[in-house]
Image 1 (tube, rainbow, N blue to C red):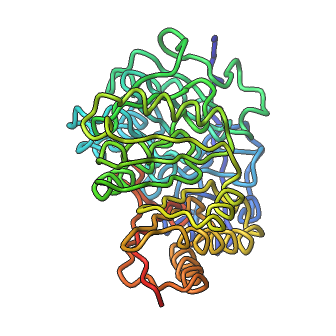
Image 2: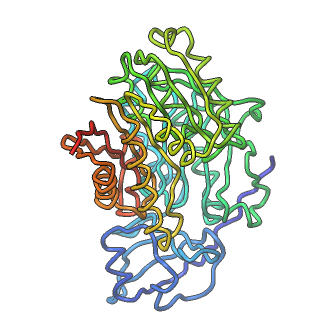
Image 3: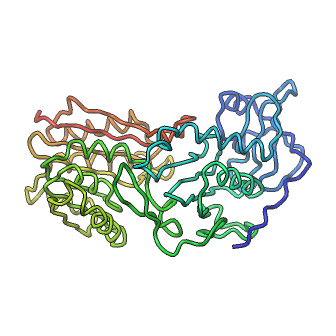
Length: 411
């Protein structure tokens, strides 16, 4: 793939915001929406530098101009004026990597997030590591002019053999000077899924065409919690996707794992993950079963058949793609709780997660308890978990992941 980064205009955009927008930037919110802009000196191209001045005409912040998105400016620096060049991006990447020192020092985990978008000062860009492959995903074309500097910093500081580029839906629909989804910026294009380790367990990432960057890394800590309580348990993993929770449960000594997903391709990957860990202690005694079905349909049938499991894991995709979807999402979470708890054996555990930033932790925990009440249970000792160290939270919308671990008690 041949990519020639467009040059940044030497003419900076001068931007002034309405009071509410200025207040948000002072709070270090990384997004400036189009309706927050009071005036702009001229029109710019994606990735041009937009300098935000306050009411006293003093420097407030600088960001990347994004004329093709309602998020018109993606803020990258607040405070004193700063030159945005290769040195700046090198410092930003270095700071992000330092937040992950605990993972970089562990040899049994070779897959984790390197750059978590807005939360690491890179609004609209993420980078994940899978062993010796780095995957960069762009959600905005504004990153084009700066991509070469960021890749260079990652190559110098991380030393990957391969760097793959992935594109979000909005970015993929635009002309990106030769960038294509799944293309290779450094090294040879991967011909198959990339193997990596997570807490000593073997997984693979489809870095070229898989969801996100090839694997869902954010549930690592929650998967580990399941492993710790899975000894001798019969485990149901609903919305199993590529089977991460099931593999951890099996490694923890589970008697059986049942993976349920509507995607045959995801289940095939889950089977490969189980097979890849066949020699790990604990996994050898675990009976593994897959069910290709809609999660709600499966749960209703299982409840009607009076099935029971020691651990029920429910980790659905985001139900709230937009704000108007939140009420429906909350109803779905509540319904999943009600159905899931009816399958939990005495002294068993429900593990239920949400990955929607539009649903707050308070809302999610509230509907889980409401669903428990509907099913005739109370959740006295519920534990709520959040983000792992490689998925830090830097602004309110950055907090998306929450999970409830609860042992239900009959009301």
